Structure formats: C-alpha cells, structure tokens
Image 1 (cartoon, rainbow, N blue to C red):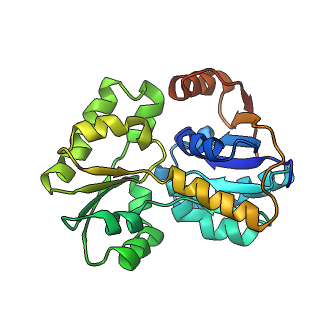
Image 2 (cartoon, rainbow, N blue to C red; image 1 turned 60 degrees about the horizontal axis):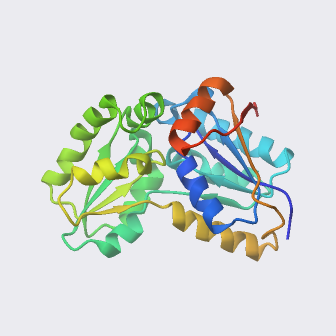
Length: 261
C-alpha cells in the first residue's frame, strides 16, 4: 500500500477516457492527470521532440511524488515509451492500439485502425501489426485534426461530424469487422463512429485493458491502494480554457491548475 498518487499524462484531454477506466477499477487510488496542452497535438510534432518531452514530464512527475505513471496517449507511447521506461524509476504503463485483440476477434480478416498519423507511421505500430496481425488486412486510417476538433468544438459538433464522414467511410467500404480506436480522444465519439459502420462491427478501446495492467503492476510492486479517490487535473496550457473543455468532455466541472514540468 502506498498513499502517493498515480500520474496520468496525455498531450491533451483524450486521456480522460483512460482516467475514467482507471478510477472505475481502482477507486482507492489518488490520481494526478496532466494534459500537456501547450504542445497539443503531439501527432504533428517530430518524434525526437515527443521523446524528449515525454522523458522530461516523467522525471518531473516522479519528483512530484507519483508512485506510477500511465502514458495515456498513443502518440506518446509510440514515440517515447521506451525512452521513458529507461529514464524513469517508476512503474510505467503505456497504451497502444489494440491490434492484438482485434486480430483475435476479426472474422473477415479486415481490421481498421483509427489513429494519428504519427502513431501509424511509428516503428512501434509497425512491429505491433507484424507481430500480431501479419496474416490479416490492416487498414491504417490516419485521422489528422480529429482529436483537435473534439477538444475545440466538442464531440457532437459539425467539424467532428465532417471529419468522421471522411475517416470512417474507407473502413466501412473495406468491410472491416473490427475497428480499433487508436487515440484516447476517439472513445468520446465512439457512438458516432459506430453509426457510420455496418451493424455488428466491433469497436475496440484499450482503456479497461490499461486499468487491468496498472492494477497488476501496482500489486506486484506492493503499491496498490492507500488513496481515497482524490483527483487533481493540471495542464501546461491556460487553466480557464482547459477547464471549459474538461467540463464539456467529463460531464462535470473539475478544477484545473497550471503545472509546467
């Protein structure tokens, strides 16, 4: 048992979908959620920048007293997870697109993956496909601008609708029967994606799998429990504007503080 908080970070607020899964599974933990919105979106940044920024954030979170770190960003995982694990003394849990479970679930042999351009072009993603889905057809659908539109305009907005029309249509046309939501922002619009796909297509979100893995890592390190469900949300951007977006996505207001690693 350890009373220190678990740190969760993302380039923006998509990681709140992961945070919700973590808190549901681990109610006796405290959490510190950091949104690096000053540099949103990571998907448009050079890989070297994401790697250096990720290590900087991880080191700062360790100094702040975190007992474990969750990288709640597929782009940051693809570019920086290995460097963060090498540099951080903390247990690190990272998420990646659910290609492995998709390969086990598909019946048509066609898997769609919606993610940022940076995630899909990463060596880590290519290894993931090669290791687990080489015998299947994997449609890597880059979704530039979608995460930003969800944060800026809200999930139910016209800009998001228009982007989804463009990004989901190729997956529906190719008869994908499993679609992986490879960015933490996309669960906010899972229902809208599903409406654009044929009935019966499965959508895979890895939030619950990350929560189970974190629970295992904490238990193995004798760090499980010790909190009381407290949550602190911080951002490298402007707290007022970030707070408004948090309220829209989370469904209720949460205080947001400014924090710079």
